[in-house]
Image (cartoon, rainbow, N blue to C red; front, side):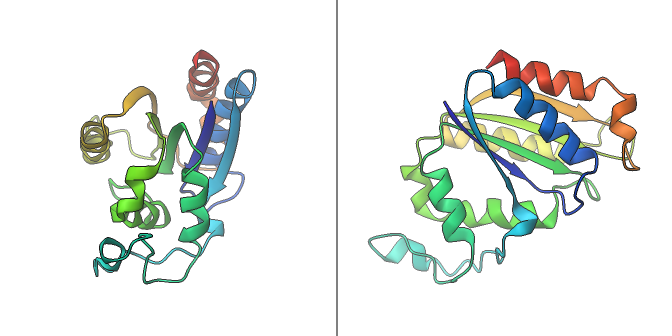
Length: 177
């Protein structure tokens, strides 16, 4: 299986990246995986112009790095969305990529499965509720299989995630695929 991880953290080597690394270690035993740190790509927010709906090849009117990410998604069986949680939502960088999937080209992607990995500093029980609602709507709309979630609360400073069981959970999720 080809697995594409979209990681939304703008901070290198911190908790979100450590969670991604643990998941990848579990996955690599059986599958091909590519990690896209969306912060490294210039992706503009969707303008809602619908130009992509009006042309045969679903080309976006914006000329940025989203074309590179579309190409990667075109060869992906499973998508893993990973993000730090900022003010109860995904990082802005990741949200821009997700919003650009408004493009009908998404219907040509072979993606059948998704997983979600989130890291948040707060410990509130409802910390992930808004993201989980959006995730579930995507699963339902695209008829995707949810293969798992790792939701980590109370992780703020660099390395805090090492004090939790989350890295093992991410590794085991990857290994289970």
